[in-house]
Length: 86
Length: 225
Image (tube, rainbow over all chains, first blue to last red; front, side, top):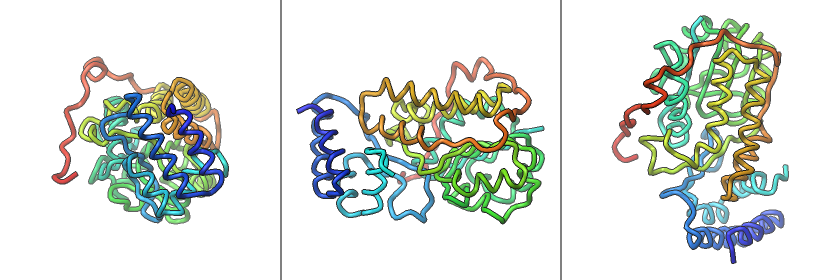
């Protein structure tokens, strides 16, 4: 399955609010991307929010699934970013 | 009038974002910039009232913009209006478009450009010492650089804002990585311009020839980063 297909499954899991499924879908998306030879040497999701936020300013992309599972605020952020739902 | 350029540089997101400003904006401006440990409240208080444009890169929240190690630079209701009166302001920071931006305009800023939600991008942590060479980060950060350069070319706040907007649109259309594309679109959707869209500052000279060709030397990173 292509990374685009896996991304759609990730989007659906975020819309459903299913953290475990979203984490698993993101893992599969990452594996598909590796198979396709995409991505930098150490891609990291970063943001410019202050420490007042409950999620880190820098999360290596391969650790996003763990953060999705354990951190509801980060899950909500990713849902906004990926699904465009406010 | 000089420009005030605040560039926090103490963690991966500030190093990545300030790196692009260091490469493409700093050489156009006056020699004094608030970079790294100088990016604190007192030097800012001295510099800001004399400036026609304030450009800030650092962590932020709805009511505050911060400098090095998140020391507060501006907080709603806790600054001298002389720091903002008659100024064109651009903040690359999270959420400052919600409360701080409107407050800056109420206190006399000509225009404010910032973001209503988190500012996110994907960077390559292995390029922390040469962040300006990070092609993944460039998809989000080069539209910001282009808009700041437009302001420094003498273009209006609206023209500069549109340049950033179009840059995001163009990069999102060309991007194949879904996560990077989502970040670009998120930043695009949360960009905000307040105040007078016709506000502008005097044009500065363009990037001098050596700086156009040669990037700065690698940033010396603290041990353990």
